[in-house]
Image 1 (spheres, rainbow, N blue to C red):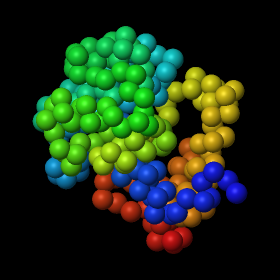
Image 2: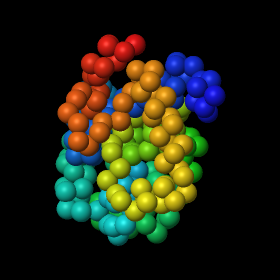
Image 3: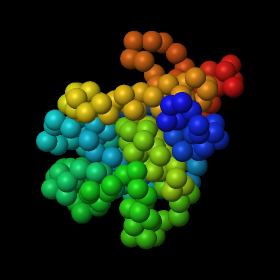
Image 4: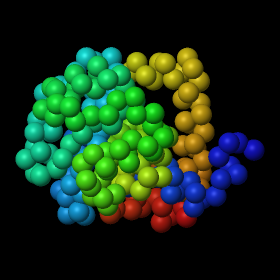
Length: 208
């Protein structure tokens, strides 16, 4: 029996299924989040905002953060990256000092720290990241809205293959797919796997 086969579908759904799934941070419908009462956004850094191999955010990411702030969102970084890298990104993104580095996701302790530091309720918070086990699981367990985006880097993919980290993640994705709970959208397939907040992919209705 595989690691995830003994877990109930309810547990897998509550822990690993993101509320939003889109190709990049730029494709998320932030207006829907705002309409749902979300005012606070935390972002992962590596392979979410910029590839691990890049030293800083690109112009599109900087513009996105300016737009989000103009819409009334409080925006912070919640990353497992180093403090130096987090500080560099926060500064370039126009949110100096608004970050927690070495967050140890999937542990949830730093979501609580953000909640206390900024005085927000869980229902006002959303987290955006690229990792279903670190970002989605930690956010879901803590009780915030979770937004998953595709990994935009190439270095981490290579490191995962060497360390066999991808194999474990692949096992989880296969279990979710077999149960009709969630699908990773293939780059070269058309389909309905991507969804915004409040949407339900059509495949869930077909397979559950």
